[in-house]
Image (cartoon, rainbow, N blue to C red; front, side):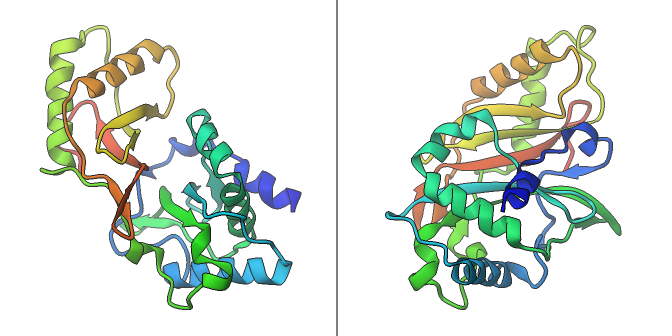
Length: 245
């Protein structure tokens, strides 16, 4: 069991961005072979065959996995997640153990190439054990956060603010980055992060975070079974172009 947990906690930031990394799986692709229903079935099977006990109360842990181009998953756990984990410790432990037991992960594909990609989903303890249904499909009950007008408009607004706030001669970032943040249940954003990390870029990234907070946009929050929740969102970003899809 320790090997499973350690395996999931291993993060591969060292070389991950030397290859292409997608903010999410492309439309029509899913990180688990045979789809979300089979993933939930295999998690439920783990709970039953190992004699795992359910949580004393209903808890939720918002899982973020990073699945590399070989299909190897790693759990993304940041310092900003610590409070949520403490409040939902049982759900966190169940998610880590069950996901660590699964074998049928698969990488994302783009233009015929296997690539690294992120996968986010809420793990709800109330939907497993005695409440589990054989047709349980997390993609049907979870609605990701959306931005009215689309993310492309947000990228354009970021570029507009960049031109006004930053000295292009001092800052000259190249390549594609991933901007991530938390969207709260009220539609506001917090906990902005940018990756990959680049040497001597700390102040630049702090400036980007400042700019994002200055942009007054209201998101439609993520929902589970119609109820608004705090969720994670990430988007690709090219500092040289606002037209990145």
